[in-house]
Amino acid sequence: MRYKLIALDVDGTLLNDDHHLSDENKEAIAEVTRLGGQIVLCTGRSPQNSIPFMEEMGLSGYVLGHNGAATVRVNDRKVLHQFGLDARGLDPYIEYCRQHDIHFDVNTAFDMYVDNVENLTQEANFMYEHFRIMPASLPAWDDFREPIVKFTVFTQSDILDEAQREWGTWTQQYNILRSGEFFVDFMHPEASKGNALKNLAVQLGIPQEEVLSIGNYYNDISMLTYAGLGVAMDNSPLEVKAAANAVTGTNNDSGVCDALVKYCLS
Image (cartoon, rainbow, N blue to C red):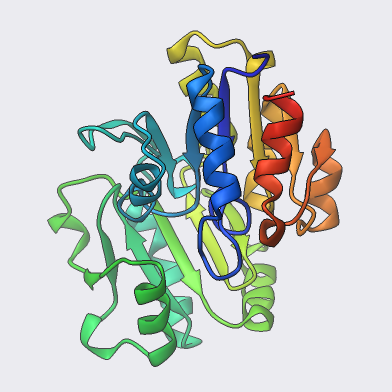
């Protein structure tokens, strides 16, 4: 099989719009694994709520969570690598979010914190239930014992557009990525899906040309361009398709299965 390491985004790629894993995708992944390919999830999600999909597929190996800011081994949940960011530099962004009533959360590799867990909006509660994660209340920076790897803001897309325009005029000290219509993620400047995938490939001794990646959004571009073959979903924005080498079907039509069959199993 030409591709030995296959990196899959989760939301909008591996999962359909109802956040379910199709039998077609699951079967193709099982066959790729049987033939010696190694599947890794490369996602904006936390390892905490992406590892269960690895387990559902019967896979061990690795999850590149928080857009590549934390690489975790599935079997023992060991954090193999993480890009910790400068937490105190987030203070002006947090102040902006509070002034404009924009929800935010702060993430370590496995834990998530929000401003006040008792006062979450209905939308935020629904989101966290949907993504199978329960946040805690944000402590003081000095009380953190683990590196902070990601700061995420969540609000309506037009409010997010305006916030991004404003933040774009500030001194840049983070990798700021639109990871979904309603989400913007802040990470260490070197944290990206592409860098995490590159680091893992080097660690596993797999050449770049034997890496395949499949994704659907702006935060996937770095891994699509790193891989020997980058495949965009048909539900991707045009800029993401332009960055890829090929386009497969949509996430609602098991496009991951189609790509694996075409590039790994044919």
